[in-house]
Length: 532
Image (cartoon, rainbow, N blue to C red; front, side, top):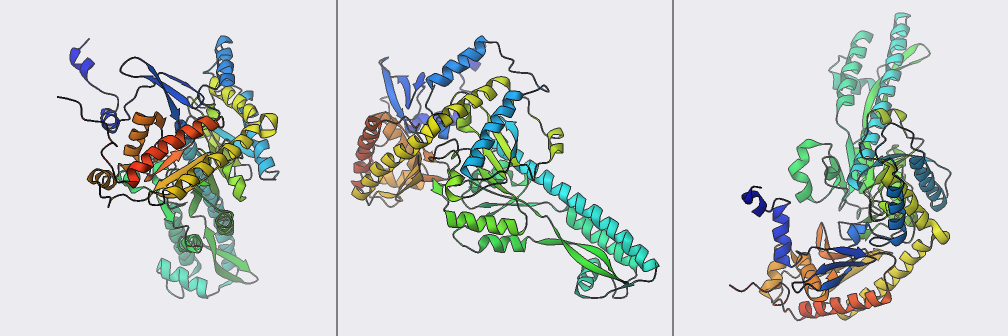
């Protein structure tokens, strides 16, 4: 072995060093329920209360006994994990189970076809790929229809029909550089040229400000945080971000992106230029509870406004339930609370029962293009093991008439009650408490003007939430992280098996932290420097 290589830290070394400096550099050795375990310098096992929950991946806890036992049984059976291009009835059963939940929660008879994936970001990329595939097929169909109409118009002119000069004709003439008395061949040439340019233009996708949908080449373009997105802007489709605090913004942006194609119709003995709407918007994508923006739920009024604006131009809606779904908010789909039925759904995280990496994209059958299955595939998606585990996880969530959902609502309510009590007590420190079920954000006031140079410095550097996380872990064995695009907001996403004792333990640790911040005492927030 090369001794130099053995001494190097090669697995994301920068992150490792940053975690160590913030007091978060811990190696966990065991996990169960809402607890992670590590050994301290004396070799004693330390139990850490985990409120991160794999960023929403452990709705039924770490190493859920029922899921673990089932997974072991699958290995004992030597199930085929890799059997690509074969029948997958288990995957179909998983899709049917999710469809039954959709039909129940949204009171609909619509069916959704499923495409399986490995991660949430990949599931989202499938959604935008399919939406673009669907859009292009619509454009191709429209072009074919226009081609047929143009030939009919040519024949009509040959038979003596005249071309009507009106406003639409004038717009075509201006866009194509035609004279007012252009003949049918010139008009058709102009239509072909203008339509070709417009159909070749890149699509526009829309998402609310604050969105987060992953960090792959496509999904990162839908992530509002410029730090994540702008280094890769040139690589993929572009997204326009909609300020949802302006009720009219979405409709205005949709109208601004409206484009048309020119067509010819024969009416009696006259050929007339008409305009046809060109599908230019690939989709509107949103999280019903924005996770990385600081845990911000959408309301029913906003959801209705989105649906109406998108329906007016046949723009599909992608509902990202990767973090908010699987029962975390008290229903399987967080979007069901606000009556927002999507054309696409993306699921991941807790779909794997906390032990497998699996995801799926659901496409409403009225939009589904079966040809998509020939242009998209994934080696590890829909593998035998993760798909079976996903099916058993769904069974566990649905058991006892949705006991898990009721637990999420009840435990979330208890957690919110405790956090709101702290907010009322520490009004100068806590800015807001918000969320739904067991997806909660605890937002702190900006501390960049704190009398403590240390606290002000951490806040100014954008590390405030991580410093708080390090303090809670080091002194209270509580694991919390800030959201990716709102460093002043700590997330809480434990499992539904959160106990009253664990809530009390969390309250005690938070209270200690809040006292430090209230008193502007930054001396104890970071670990002590090691002795020389």
